[in-house]
Image 1 (cartoon, one colour):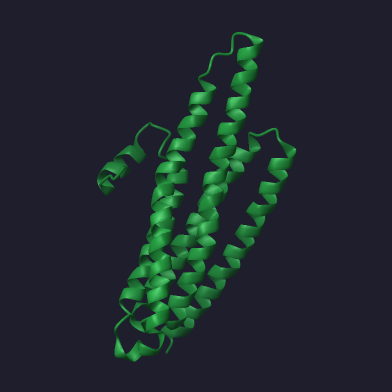
Image 2 (tube, rainbow, N blue to C red; image 1 turned 180 degrees about the vertical axis):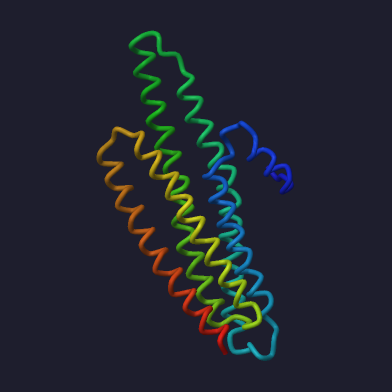
Length: 207
């Protein structure tokens, strides 16, 4: 579903719990990827950057693919949250109903955990592209490459909060342990990548 920015923000600000932070995380990823694409487009075809023209075209294609995936995840996060709410609304008057409801809540919560985790994984891929355009893209747009990295890291950390709150609600030690390890690994990688990109941006801006 396509919404105007105003419509999305109005819905976000309303008393409806979805869209919420998970959708904002995915949207932040889309914004970061779009900025990477912009730097590519401002580099491609320029004589000064002829030696990286093909590389920038490849990065552009990858950034646009990620932007599309992030955009889809905006809606998927809302859908996943709604499924959790639907599971909680199931009847719980008899023991079979309680068992069915508990299983539905567990599976819906797992799905609601996997969506922001997917956002985090895409953020790592997108940060790698932001690092390339920061180092090799049009120097006049290096600040945009820096903003791209900041938005992507914000998206990663925002998605991490959604993963954490859902894991807290699950009574499945194997699933929780595995996903917590993955979560910490992605956060550590993202922090290092942001630091590296900011170093590149600072160096480029001083030239």
